[in-house]
Image (cartoon, rainbow, N blue to C red):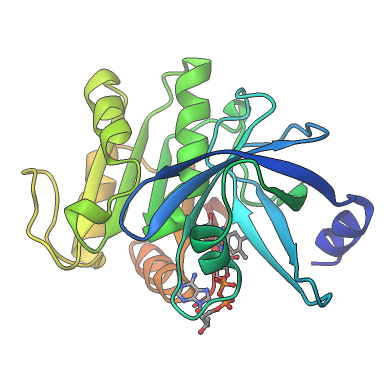
Length: 250
Ligand SMILES: Cc1cc2nc3c(=O)[nH]c(=O)nc-3n(C[C@H](O)[C@H](O)[C@H](O)COP(=O)(O)OP(=O)(O)OC[C@H]3O[C@@H](n4cnc5c(N)ncnc54)[C@H](O)[C@@H]3O)c2cc1C
């Protein structure tokens, strides 16, 4: 905790231009930011975004980088629009291509993956919690490693699965990667998926699918999602030190 504070103080704010906005689902869009000064990052890390109103009111939030570290010069942030929120509705409803926003970072050492960290990797994301896991998967694909990886991704419906087509393509192209979807308000669209929330039996089946004990497990999503999933993983015998979590709030 202290380390994170010291780190934040020494990283200056800078301006970044919104170069592209891409709709992902009805409530989620990707924002591609080109910073004035490129700072490289590790897959899994996040940036801080700061908005300042004309009256000087400041709102600051964190967003994980979803792009791979190799995509130099551009950060992709995946933002879910939360009704009644301060920052995410502004980004969705007001911000447009060509606008400038302030960013700082990257931050986050504990929730980062480098190829030398190895695998097998168990990645579990809920909603926009896919963002840092996508960066990890894209980085893994870009370096061409054969490290085994399974992504269990929870969304409300099939149409709420962020990066759905890219993930399905990766699943088809890479024999060492498996995509499993869990949809809480939709039937399973593929035989290997589940039409229910992530629960202990589903996590047990996911571990079986991985076929080996995960060397590292990354869990990301809302506070409640991360709490529930990590509780089940510990019940299933995973070693606490191998589980890394990122909580988005809520
Ligand atoms: C390290 C880190 C990385 C993050 N990465 C992402 C990311 O990649 N994409 C993304 O969309 N968000 C991410 N978040 C969450 C993000 O920082 C904001 O909290 C979120 O966008 C809400 O901000 P807001 O100003 O729109 O809403 P606020 O004004 O902060 O809150 C509005 C309401 O929504 C509730 N709420 C806040 N966060 C959540 C949540 N996650 N789920 C459900 N309810 C919530 C609040 O309790 C409040 O009632 C991350 C958070 C952290 C700490």
